[in-house]
Image (cartoon, rainbow, N blue to C red; front, side, top):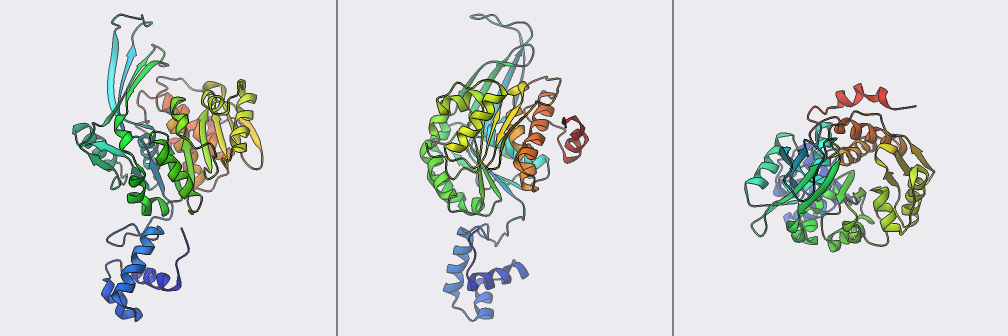
Length: 368
């Protein structure tokens, strides 16, 4: 966050000593006018040193996830799919969305996490928010609107769990304007990392990237899909870490890279476009990472997949979890790949048994 002035520091010290102190009490103690204290409190909130009314102080380690909160419907075929007819399936529904999934993974790993999203004024929206509250995610910055229904995503899976086709109703995210960022900015400014998916409109993402260039937090973005790549600004400067699969990276760069070596070249290409670092995934074939120091690849973690939905989101969360802990990106991404593999071994989009202990117990699965 931006460094407070001397008077702001004095006011912040008063609040740290007594979070319930009134502005008048601070004014009397510091020999300032109450209006001056009020102005400094507003400035501290914008700088992220306070999280709004009530003088809530930010956690020392904190991630804000910005983007999609969605109801996922998944139907897995019981036999090879036959086009243009009814197919027997098993079905399930659960909260989803890239940013929401990343937030849940992080919360299950014990990291203080907030979600900035938009849901409808409907039962589905309430279900998503209540589920996150139960996990300890701060949803105070989620906008609830009557202008559109909560987003829904439906995936049809093959018998082996791989996706055959998907459909998404994401109209609500057209309402995710830069004003949503303005409303939540103190929460973003106080974070160590801000993660965004590409569900918000291009204008909102461009505003976020531009403002991130002058902020203290680090910004990570996930492409989500090839159609949503167009929402990213051409100049990726201000994005500290960019997550994409190889198909998405090729589409953005206009290249035809193939294999792990191609993924490494694509990651370097993303850095050349301005991203501070890049992680390019190739599913079961491995991952490539590019940083200012080097570009490297590593193989996928061996797994017995049940359902691949949510694996990429888990990979992002595992990487951010370790980055916040102080790991370098290559090491953090390897742990992210492990969490992605663990998620494929569950039928849920977020592993229901995820915990720091589960992750630690599986570290031996990382190849040296």
